[in-house]
View (cartoon, one colour):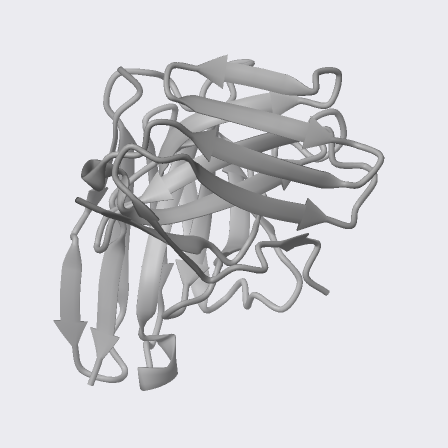
Length: 114
Length: 115
Protein backbone atom coordinates (compact mmCIF):
# COMPACT_ATOMS: atom_id res chain seq x y z
CA UNK A 1 0.00 0.00 0.00
CA UNK A 2 1.86 3.02 -1.33
CA UNK A 3 0.57 5.94 0.71
CA UNK A 4 2.77 8.49 -1.03
CA UNK A 5 3.09 8.32 -4.78
CA UNK A 6 5.17 10.15 -7.30
CA UNK A 7 3.76 9.04 -10.60
CA UNK A 8 6.46 10.50 -12.79
CA UNK A 9 9.71 8.56 -12.50
CA UNK A 10 11.52 11.17 -14.55
CA UNK A 11 11.26 14.75 -15.75
CA UNK A 12 13.44 16.67 -18.16
CA UNK A 13 13.42 20.46 -18.46
CA UNK A 14 15.49 23.15 -20.06
CA UNK A 15 17.72 25.37 -17.98
CA UNK A 16 15.91 28.54 -16.93
CA UNK A 17 12.46 27.00 -17.24
CA UNK A 18 10.18 25.88 -14.44
CA UNK A 19 10.35 22.34 -13.05
CA UNK A 20 7.17 21.00 -11.51
CA UNK A 21 7.35 17.79 -9.52
CA UNK A 22 4.15 16.21 -8.31
CA UNK A 23 3.21 14.01 -5.39
CA UNK A 24 -0.07 12.44 -4.28
CA UNK A 25 -0.95 10.86 -0.97
CA UNK A 26 -3.79 8.75 0.32
CA UNK A 27 -3.49 8.97 4.10
CA UNK A 28 -5.67 11.83 5.35
CA UNK A 29 -3.79 11.77 8.66
CA UNK A 30 -0.66 13.16 7.04
CA UNK A 31 -0.23 16.74 8.15
CA UNK A 32 3.38 17.57 7.38
CA UNK A 33 5.06 17.23 4.02
CA UNK A 34 8.67 17.52 2.93
CA UNK A 35 10.72 17.46 -0.23
CA UNK A 36 14.19 15.98 -0.32
CA UNK A 37 16.80 16.02 -3.03
CA UNK A 38 19.17 13.12 -3.51
CA UNK A 39 22.32 12.69 -5.53
CA UNK A 40 23.67 9.21 -6.31
CA UNK A 41 25.53 7.54 -3.42
CA UNK A 42 24.48 10.29 -1.03
CA UNK A 43 21.74 10.64 1.54
CA UNK A 44 18.72 12.86 0.89
CA UNK A 45 19.09 16.56 1.55
CA UNK A 46 16.16 18.48 2.95
CA UNK A 47 14.79 21.13 0.59
CA UNK A 48 11.52 22.51 1.84
CA UNK A 49 8.52 21.54 3.92
CA UNK A 50 4.93 22.54 4.44
CA UNK A 51 2.44 22.07 7.22
CA UNK A 52 -1.15 21.16 6.41
CA UNK A 53 -2.34 24.48 7.78
CA UNK A 54 -0.71 26.19 4.81
CA UNK A 55 -1.20 25.86 1.09
CA UNK A 56 2.08 27.37 -0.02
CA UNK A 57 5.61 27.73 1.22
CA UNK A 58 8.39 29.46 -0.62
CA UNK A 59 12.15 29.40 -0.16
CA UNK A 60 14.18 31.06 -2.86
CA UNK A 61 13.75 29.19 -6.13
CA UNK A 62 11.70 26.46 -4.45
CA UNK A 63 7.98 26.65 -3.77
CA UNK A 64 5.81 23.87 -2.43
CA UNK A 65 2.06 23.91 -2.97
CA UNK A 66 -0.36 21.78 -1.00
CA UNK A 67 -3.91 20.97 -2.05
CA UNK A 68 -5.40 19.09 0.89
CA UNK A 69 -8.74 18.41 -0.72
CA UNK A 70 -7.00 16.72 -3.64
CA UNK A 71 -4.32 15.16 -1.41
CA UNK A 72 -1.75 16.56 -3.77
CA UNK A 73 1.42 18.54 -3.41
CA UNK A 74 3.87 19.89 -5.90
CA UNK A 75 7.36 21.34 -5.89
CA UNK A 76 8.13 24.20 -8.26
CA UNK A 77 11.71 25.08 -9.08
CA UNK A 78 12.18 28.29 -10.99
CA UNK A 79 14.43 28.99 -12.71
CA UNK A 80 15.78 25.47 -13.06
CA UNK A 81 19.54 25.02 -13.09
CA UNK A 82 21.69 22.08 -14.24
CA UNK A 83 22.81 21.59 -10.63
CA UNK A 84 19.20 20.82 -9.73
CA UNK A 85 19.50 17.52 -11.60
CA UNK A 86 18.89 14.86 -8.96
CA UNK A 87 16.22 12.53 -7.62
CA UNK A 88 13.51 14.35 -5.71
CA UNK A 89 11.53 12.57 -3.02
CA UNK A 90 8.40 13.81 -1.38
CA UNK A 91 7.69 12.58 2.12
CA UNK A 92 4.83 12.85 4.57
CA UNK A 93 4.31 12.39 8.26
CA UNK A 94 1.57 12.35 10.85
CA UNK A 95 3.40 14.87 12.95
CA UNK A 96 1.21 14.65 15.97
CA UNK A 97 0.86 10.91 16.34
CA UNK A 98 3.75 9.02 14.86
CA UNK A 99 6.91 10.63 16.14
CA UNK A 100 7.77 12.01 12.76
CA UNK A 101 7.98 8.75 10.90
CA UNK A 102 8.33 9.69 7.26
CA UNK A 103 6.68 7.89 4.40
CA UNK A 104 8.48 8.48 1.14
CA UNK A 105 7.37 8.47 -2.44
CA UNK A 106 9.31 6.60 -5.08
CA UNK A 107 11.18 9.62 -6.30
CA UNK A 108 11.35 11.58 -9.55
CA UNK A 109 14.59 11.93 -11.48
CA UNK A 110 14.88 15.54 -12.61
CA UNK A 111 17.26 16.36 -15.41
CA UNK A 112 17.90 20.00 -16.23
CA UNK A 113 19.51 20.41 -19.62
CA UNK A 114 21.87 23.34 -20.27
CA UNK B 1 24.49 22.91 10.66
CA UNK B 2 22.55 19.67 11.13
CA UNK B 3 25.21 17.30 9.83
CA UNK B 4 24.74 13.56 10.08
CA UNK B 5 27.73 11.33 9.49
CA UNK B 6 27.35 7.68 8.54
CA UNK B 7 30.17 5.18 8.50
CA UNK B 8 31.26 3.17 6.62
CA UNK B 9 30.08 4.41 3.25
CA UNK B 10 30.75 1.09 1.56
CA UNK B 11 31.30 -2.39 2.89
CA UNK B 12 31.78 -5.71 1.18
CA UNK B 13 31.85 -8.85 3.26
CA UNK B 14 31.29 -12.57 3.15
CA UNK B 15 27.99 -14.21 3.84
CA UNK B 16 27.54 -15.05 7.51
CA UNK B 17 29.45 -12.13 8.94
CA UNK B 18 27.97 -9.31 10.97
CA UNK B 19 28.30 -5.71 9.89
CA UNK B 20 27.97 -2.62 12.07
CA UNK B 21 26.98 0.75 10.64
CA UNK B 22 27.35 3.93 12.68
CA UNK B 23 25.26 7.05 12.47
CA UNK B 24 26.37 10.20 14.26
CA UNK B 25 24.83 13.62 14.58
CA UNK B 26 27.82 15.94 14.54
CA UNK B 27 26.43 19.30 15.57
CA UNK B 28 23.14 18.60 17.27
CA UNK B 29 21.62 16.20 19.74
CA UNK B 30 19.43 13.62 18.10
CA UNK B 31 16.62 12.48 20.30
CA UNK B 32 15.36 10.22 17.56
CA UNK B 33 17.23 8.39 14.83
CA UNK B 34 15.75 6.46 11.96
CA UNK B 35 17.12 3.67 9.81
CA UNK B 36 16.01 3.23 6.22
CA UNK B 37 16.75 0.79 3.48
CA UNK B 38 16.63 1.58 -0.20
CA UNK B 39 16.58 -0.87 -3.07
CA UNK B 40 17.62 0.30 -6.55
CA UNK B 41 15.14 2.69 -8.12
CA UNK B 42 12.80 2.37 -5.17
CA UNK B 43 11.74 4.54 -2.29
CA UNK B 44 13.35 4.73 1.12
CA UNK B 45 11.68 2.20 3.38
CA UNK B 46 11.71 2.89 7.09
CA UNK B 47 13.13 -0.05 9.02
CA UNK B 48 13.09 1.23 12.58
CA UNK B 49 12.91 4.26 14.82
CA UNK B 50 15.21 4.57 17.80
CA UNK B 51 15.00 6.95 20.71
CA UNK B 52 18.02 7.56 22.90
CA UNK B 53 18.11 5.20 25.83
CA UNK B 54 15.19 3.04 24.81
CA UNK B 55 14.53 0.07 22.56
CA UNK B 56 14.03 0.64 18.88
CA UNK B 57 10.60 0.39 17.31
CA UNK B 58 10.71 -1.80 14.23
CA UNK B 59 8.44 -1.56 11.22
CA UNK B 60 6.29 -4.51 10.31
CA UNK B 61 8.26 -7.18 8.52
CA UNK B 62 11.66 -6.07 9.78
CA UNK B 63 13.43 -8.76 11.82
CA UNK B 64 14.56 -7.40 15.16
CA UNK B 65 17.13 -10.12 15.67
CA UNK B 66 18.55 -9.58 12.23
CA UNK B 67 18.88 -5.82 12.41
CA UNK B 68 20.09 -4.81 15.86
CA UNK B 69 19.79 -1.14 16.65
CA UNK B 70 21.44 0.64 19.54
CA UNK B 71 20.98 4.31 20.38
CA UNK B 72 23.20 4.70 23.40
CA UNK B 73 23.74 8.44 23.27
CA UNK B 74 22.16 11.57 21.84
CA UNK B 75 24.69 11.60 19.03
CA UNK B 76 25.19 7.97 18.08
CA UNK B 77 23.06 5.14 16.81
CA UNK B 78 24.31 1.87 15.36
CA UNK B 79 22.72 -0.70 13.09
CA UNK B 80 24.21 -4.19 13.14
CA UNK B 81 23.23 -6.56 10.38
CA UNK B 82 23.78 -9.96 11.96
CA UNK B 83 24.75 -13.05 9.97
CA UNK B 84 24.39 -11.12 6.75
CA UNK B 85 23.36 -12.89 3.56
CA UNK B 86 23.29 -11.74 -0.06
CA UNK B 87 19.62 -10.71 0.22
CA UNK B 88 20.66 -8.17 2.86
CA UNK B 89 22.70 -6.33 0.25
CA UNK B 90 21.22 -2.87 -0.04
CA UNK B 91 21.71 0.82 0.62
CA UNK B 92 21.14 1.66 4.27
CA UNK B 93 20.57 5.26 5.33
CA UNK B 94 20.16 6.78 8.74
CA UNK B 95 18.57 10.05 9.69
CA UNK B 96 18.42 12.07 12.87
CA UNK B 97 15.97 14.46 14.36
CA UNK B 98 16.66 16.89 17.18
CA UNK B 99 14.47 18.24 19.91
CA UNK B 100 11.15 19.46 18.45
CA UNK B 101 12.98 19.85 15.19
CA UNK B 102 11.76 18.89 11.80
CA UNK B 103 13.04 17.89 9.38
CA UNK B 104 15.06 14.72 9.59
CA UNK B 105 18.63 15.11 8.44
CA UNK B 106 20.16 12.21 6.60
CA UNK B 107 23.54 10.60 6.48
CA UNK B 108 25.12 9.72 3.15
CA UNK B 109 24.21 6.07 3.44
CA UNK B 110 26.10 2.79 3.49
CA UNK B 111 26.29 0.51 0.49
CA UNK B 112 26.33 -3.03 1.85
CA UNK B 113 27.32 -5.86 -0.45
CA UNK B 114 27.27 -9.42 0.83
CA UNK B 115 29.13 -11.97 -1.26
